[in-house]
Structures are given as structure tokens and as C-alpha cells.
Amino acid sequence: MASITDTGKHRVGIGIVIHDGSSFVMASCCQILEATYDSLVVGIMAIFRGILFSKDYGLAPCVLEPDKVEAVDRVLNNNLLNASHGSILSKIADLSSQINGMNISAISTSANRVAQKLAKNALDTSKNTFWVEDFPNCIRGLVETDRSF
Image (cartoon, rainbow, N blue to C red):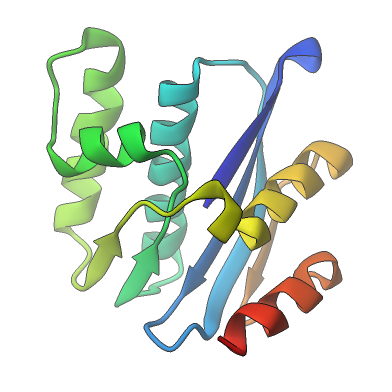
């Protein structure tokens, strides 16, 4: 999962790809947030949206791979000390406990090209779009390349 902030238009594009352990795409989506936040909050919000998406579509077990290391650390350590992040981290902890077999681990931005492309697509189209057992054409080549590794 990835997020891109467009500070000029005060919005954030989120790209989420949920796959199984064999890299089969279970679902994908582009989402828009009509606000700007700092990088940490954007990363935490992307994780929250990914967990909600996974839960809503019954996509477990699954792997969520955000590219914001600090956000992943906050989520995995359940660090509720910061009041501005505490509420959303608490919601993430509650949701995570309801999903059996969900794994969250950070990956580098360069390894997250598919989700980055979806986040950019969210900004370009300004729409929330969801695909189950499918993905949009804009990432097809990247998905096929990732599967070959």
C-alpha cells in the first residue's frame, strides 16, 4: 500500500493491493482523502484503510505491505502515546484483532511500484475505486512483472 500527498489540492491518494502469500492479487483499490496530513499520519491512515478494505471484503489471510516504515512501526508497536495518532492506532489495533491471518510488514517505496501507481491513479481520477480478484489496466504490467519474481 502506498500514499501520495497533493498539498496543492489538499488531498491524499492511497493505493492498496492485497495479495496472498503467492503474490496472487486478491483485491486492489484507489482511495482519495480530501485533506493533507504529515507523512506519518498519511502512512497510518493508509494502513487503516487497507485493514478496513481487507475486513470488508473478507480478504484474510493476507499481506499488507505499506512503504512508510515509521507508520508500520507505530502500528505494530501499538504506540498510542501521541494524542494525534492515538485514536486511529487504537482503531487499527481493534480491527487487526478481528482479522485472523493478517500480516503487516514495511517494504521500500521502490518495491511498492504497484501501490504507488494506484495512489497516483487515485489522485488523477479523484475517485474511490475497488477491484476484487482483479486490478486496473494501469498496473497490469507491473503486477505481471512482480509475479515473475
